[in-house]
Each structure stands twice: as structure tokens, then as C-alpha cells.
Image 1 (cartoon, rainbow, N blue to C red):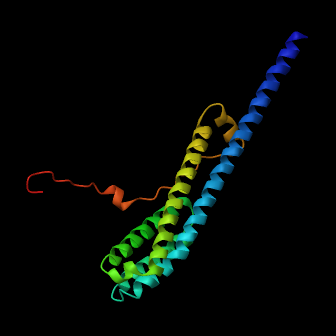
Image 2 (spheres, rainbow, N blue to C red; image 1 turned 180 degrees about the vertical axis):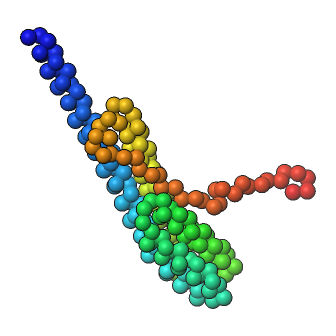
Image 3 (cartoon, rainbow, N blue to C red; image 1 turned 60 degrees about the vertical axis):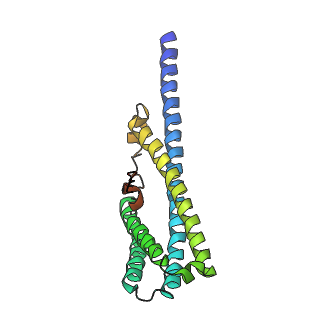
Length: 188
């Protein structure tokens, strides 16, 4: 009779462990999904700001038509992108376009002083910060999810209930990739 109780106890412990691991995976998956929805909200906010920014700059720099078209096209591609990898690639192009647009602004002191442009620029800067935060939160949750899916014994529960790894959302920062050269020589 003792052997039966031991077997029931072991089976109960295994079932309890399975339930705990399943609930943990569900919780992490929900955090990943929430993180992605926060990124999506901030990216859409950014997409809403870009046409206003383009129009503000267009009023001063009419000869930059090709740049305006590239930025608008990159925004449209990013808004229509499906999947995290495609979205990240499209966002790279949006980031490059917005940076080029802001570089054009440097040549127009009147535009840099315009109240509407300054408000748009401030809103864009705030949105970029929120995108960075949301991306960090999402990637942290993806790391937790991927670790749980790959680790034993939760990998057994993950494979049994079709939990899978998620991709990270990585946007290339063209400024961060370029090394800064500093010349401290007597001529520099």
C-alpha cells in the first residue's frame, strides 16, 4: 500500500510541475504579446507623425522632393510590413529616412525656429524614446520565452503544448554602427 501512495505522490508532483510550467509559459507568452502590441502602438504613432514632419520640411525645402518620396515610401512599407523580421527591416529604412530629413532641416534656420516644426520634432523624439523602451521590454520578454522554451523541463511542456521561440525585434541604428574617429594629434 505504501508503494501505491508513493506512486500517486510522484504522479501528483509531476502533474503539478507540468501545470506550474504551463502557466509560466502562458504568462511569458502573454508578456511577449503585450510587448509587441506596445511596439506596434508606438510605431503607428511614429507613422502618424512622419507625414506632418515631411509637410513641415517640404514648405521650406521644396527641392528635396526625392527625399520626401523615399521617407513616405519607407513609412508605407513599414506600416504594411507583416512579421517581426520584415517590420524590423522596414523600420531600418524609416529610421534612415527620418535621419536624412532631420539632416536637411539643419540647413534651414527658419524651419528650426518654427513652432510647429519644433513641436513635431519634440513629439518625434519622445516617440522614438517610447519605441526604444517598448522594444527593450519586448526583447526582454522574448529572451525569457526563448529560455523557457529551450530549458529542461519546461521544454517538454513547451513542445507538448506548441509553445515556440519568438524572434527579437532589432532595428539597426545606422549612427551606432559607425565608429567615431577621434584625432588627438597635434594637428587635430
